[in-house]
Length: 97
Image (cartoon, rainbow, N blue to C red):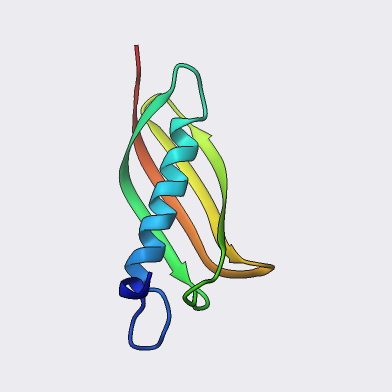
């Protein structure tokens, strides 16, 4: 959407950070049955390249570890074969009944 583009015709960093947070937390949510209920404790996003209006972005996520109360994740956002951001997150988890 045009209102997510900055003055350099690239996606705002906040848009990519939000995409990273949603992708990482959803992977935690969907990792076990019954589903886990994650809350973001820490999120790191490293910007490596721009995303332009119309680019198709894909998030690749890896769950590094799930403990009793926390989950640790990492991944990348790609545009085609190019990595435009890397990310890692730590999530507090509650287990649904």
